Length: 84
Image (cartoon, rainbow, N blue to C red; front, side):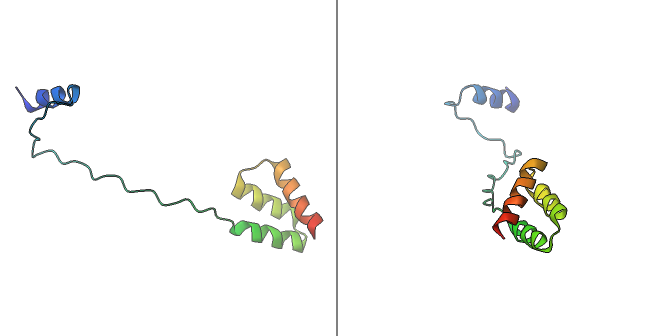
């Protein structure tokens, strides 16, 4: 019986122990992904643009970094303007 058939048999029956082929190199275990860090640098920049009166640029920057709709971005920038 070829090693291929033995391997297929072992895949079907996990209780059966077969000798591993030394030619097969197993992949290393996957590394743990790095934790996701929310990047909020753009919020300070949006606030700075609002302070300068560049409302359209502030909306563009907010939309580019949050993938929100135009309406949502405009509402956010308007809230920043009201808080001044």
